[in-house]
Amino acid sequence: MSLSDPLGDMLTRIRNAYGRKKSSVSTPASRLRARVLEVLKSEGYIRDYSQTDFENGKSEIEIELKYFDGAPVVREIERVSKPGRRVYVSAKSIPQVANGLGI
Image (cartoon, rainbow, N blue to C red; front, side, top):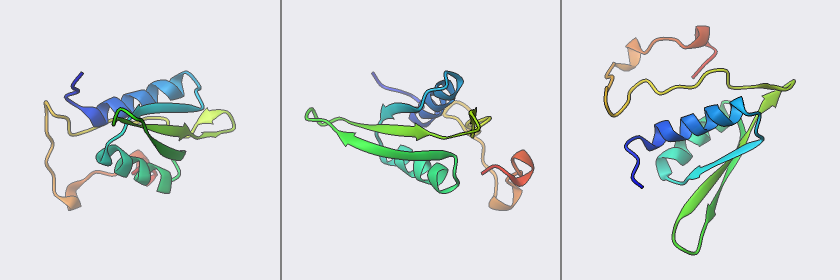
């Protein structure tokens, strides 16, 4: 099955897993997803992630979610620029997220 928005799919999986209080969630692997997860990890929003390669040539990323005192570290996660509606702005005009606490 082909996804029109693989990054949006990954963010939805993370959001749904936090809603169900899961400790981890898996998603099909790609370089873009791995790079986004690297940023989330370096900013402290996820605990870790690891990639598993299968014999059939497919790979999967296992994402370890992070909680603080039983509450999800990520309160809200969404994609702004989507395949159906692209948003183009200069670097200087990117608005602050969560009063400067988000990325």
